Amino acid sequence: MIFKKWMAATATIALLAGCSAEPAENEETEAEKSAEEAPMATPEPAKEETKEEAEPEAEAEPEAEVPEEPAAEATAEPKYRVNAANWRVEPISDAPAEAVLITIDDAPDDHSVEMATALKELEVPAIFFVNGHFLDTDEEKENLKKIHEMGFAIGNHTYTHTNLKTIGEAQQKEEILSLSQTVEEIIGEKPKFFRAPNGSNTDFSEALVAQEGMLLMNWSYGYDWEKQYMDAAALTDIMVNTEFLGNGSNLLMHDREWTAAALPGIIKGLSSKGYSFVDPDEIEGITP
Ligand SMILES: [Zn+2]
Image (cartoon, rainbow, N blue to C red; front, side, top):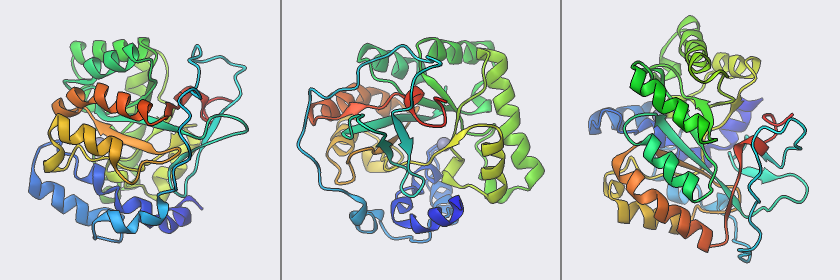
């Protein structure tokens, strides 16, 4: 079912070439190659494809910010749910619709702790999607602990950032489960969210993720893997002023130098446009 929704959401997903182009190795050719392999059928620039997805913005209500609540209150009611057709987070009942979700992928590499610290200072919750190959050393494990202890949600982004469509089921299982186990060994709990590298899910991985009790998500938009936005000022501007910004947008960023530099400005820009920030702990499927 999710897969069908996925197809229907090709519009949104065109933008998702994003993760495929993650400059993990900073190789343009590799990025282009994976973009072609990505599940997004439309190779065109996503902007036009996604137009219909951009909703008219409502009036800004800066006062309608989600109050910060202590995380992990067992009795808390979920306030948002992820729409698997477009990956937006939608309010349940009276939660503010004018909110966005901040997500940081390929963590915790060199900048995640800095990014978490900046978000914490701004009282903005976020999900850090981590990879096992960034959790090998004691220092890296310590960084994950710091991020977790600052209150951020941890997501599973597979052990080695391999495109799940290119490997068999046993290997997909290993990629997902071994990372969850590693995370649990470090912070005492398994990841509650899952995002596939390149946004590239399979029927098998979707079923496994659900079975493991993780909430799967892709994203609405992101730019920090594109050459012209590997610059803090340019990235800040596009993240705040893109036509794809709307209620419930799921914002994809990465552990990158320019993104870390841009992050406070991005948050301030979104706030000044009237957006509040969804607490991952308040998403349905996470909060019972
Ligand atoms: Zn990634």
